[in-house]
Image 1 (spheres, rainbow, N blue to C red):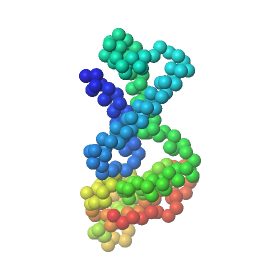
Image 2 (cartoon, helix red, strand yellow; image 1 turned 120 degrees about the horizontal axis):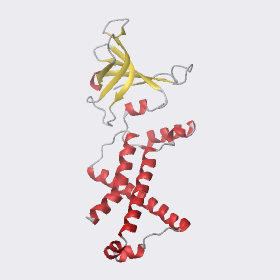
Image 3 (tube, rainbow, N blue to C red; image 1 turned 90 degrees about the horizontal axis):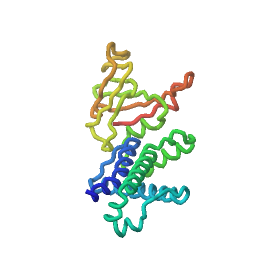
Image 4 (tube, one colour; image 1 turned 90 degrees about the vertical axis):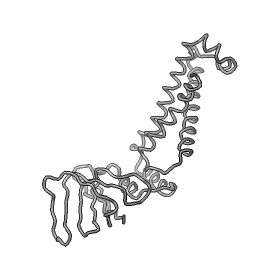
Length: 236
């Protein structure tokens, strides 16, 4: 039971960091061993950082702390004799490690970075990451903007609307889904005009049917230009 508890204490921060980091990045196709190693390495790094912070606290504030040498040499007798002290410090270590995992996995400072730094980070990610999703790259080019998407369908029709959700899978196949919401514009094949679909608030599109996809980035500030640069296009 003690060994299982220690495994959870050291592995949980790495797992939390791994899951939070995945929310900010496109999905990857990793083997079980690769995913396990990522969690273990992240957990070890976070654990070492938490231990260093607690050690610094003991040096600066001099609180009552467990005897580390006794824990290593006589773990069972010492822990039994100082159960409350060891338990509180383990809980403090776990809470601090989880806090570090949340902060570095979430990266709340990312949106506050200068635009030049954000551009450098995005360009580096495009060059370095081995698995890239075209949809992820397009829809994260300007994360502060509202994204409008237009889709040319293989039967000659055209559908457009505000981006609602999309598949983050790195594998570029026809099984991916793209959803649009808001006012849905539809132009039937060989129809020169088209228009807004009445009583329709959302639509789902299969990547298998999309032959051309256009993206327009609309700034959130009132009175700003409608698009940031020319609309990006990518073949599906």
